[in-house]
Image (cartoon, rainbow, N blue to C red; front, side, top):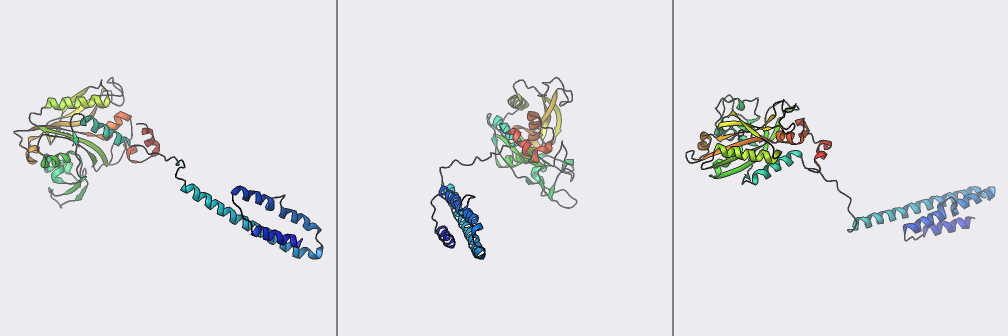
Length: 344
Ligand code: DAH
């Protein structure tokens, strides 16, 4: 029996295997319940008592060595298999989960697309701006409340006094108007999308940052009728051909006259519902004729040129389009919310 064990040890040590299948067959041959090593354990019963100790040690050695050898061979095959798989460039790739586009990006791009069809191009400006571009050149009086610490996040502010060099986070994208008008001469027809910041408590209806798209058109003989017609075109393209608009007089320091524009409520079709507070109308933007003071402060001759401007909140338009009730959803990155825009 001892010879048989020695022979098996040397057989196993010299094993050469070419495939995983072959390895499995050999494992069955030696190590399975009906294999050679099990058989030896069976025969062990008949070994003479005085030889039992020595033979027992040998059989256990054989079993240990066999287990070790098979483990090593298996590892070799596994590693080779993994390598082969990795190198197979023709293998079908694992499907990669695609992300979805953010609803605010979708709406922003739709707005840009609608206005680009009538000749508007896109201009962007810095989010960290100076007081001059955000307020001063836009005809805000020095004591205007929008400059107040409660609305504006200041980055660098002179103690006590208000200075055109104060650095702040822009509170509206109208600041890009002043950048464009100081660097370009009319005709100017631009759309300025971007993020804006205001020091507000975060709730379902307000956030400390949000997005706006500003529009500006300066040329000879630009009239309020041009503004109205452009905005009507936009409202119909964005919310459907049946959409109506109405302009209500308003006030902005940088436009004169100024207006706020409502569209017929696209949820109840103008009949009156909870969303439009039973009025049939919802406000979507501010607009007006660029104040001559603004043109002059930017170096544009207000006797020769006139222009209109408008500004809208992208979140507001998105709410109307997709009925998102809580503003916070836009910045929480909850994929359950974002995935709903997958096919858009
Ligand atoms: N800047 C204004 C705001 O943030 C929006 C606005 C109103 C922009 C009227 C304009 C405009 O260009 O003409 O509330």
